[in-house]
Length: 330
Image (cartoon, rainbow, N blue to C red):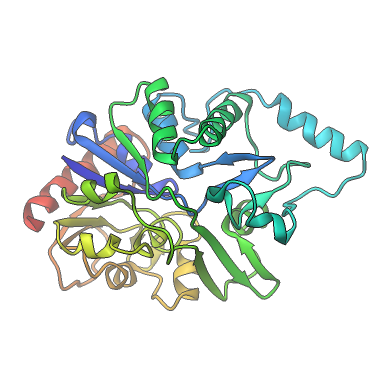
């Protein structure tokens, strides 16, 4: 068994070609939930859903978000209604006293559905409604995720990092913003002063996650701050990583990031935005997979390959390098 830590698009792109190397039935994926939001009363779990849709063979691989060829009638009508009623669009937080009311899993990240700021397709929305319905019936997020994974025919085990609320809050000169507002609605503007994982001190990894961390772990090329950071902020999580073989795939080629806001976020949180900074952020990693063009000198074993992943064949190549690195790490 091997456990992958996943968030954003980096690790899912690796998983897209990993099956010949890491059979899905022998693979667990722990998904980041710091990016989750409650939108119009239903819980959206972007990082869990990317893996869910990938393994369910319905993922929109152009966007690496949502379901391919999904319709968006409800989303479009929400925007039409807001426009006709002259309602302000963009992220609309619910009042402060509501942010900690209702279902606890949604704390600090509740948004109105008026002119929803995230594009959600109709089939995609059905997943969120089903998840929220299961939560309201008394199921945990882990249990709800398993029910939906079964409906999509997943062979891989997909686990949320916690059943407790953790919200990634980006502090900016304009005030605090949930990560989804800062990245999806504002395009990564304004600048970042610091990043807070609100609730992480009180949250804990589930027993299923702690058991999964007993197996060798692969940290995919996801954003070290907002994709992996919320997991590391949980009590016991990093301690478990220190006790098992861990291989990390750098999302950088030296100081050039493949995609996303990782460089800005690492710089804002006091890390060098580079492979060297990733290594500093992951002191528990026993070995790294770096790009052939990345000549960063690390104090741990390195396996090099072309780490660009444009298709499944590329991902399989990187997965084979990860397997080689796990042999060294073990």
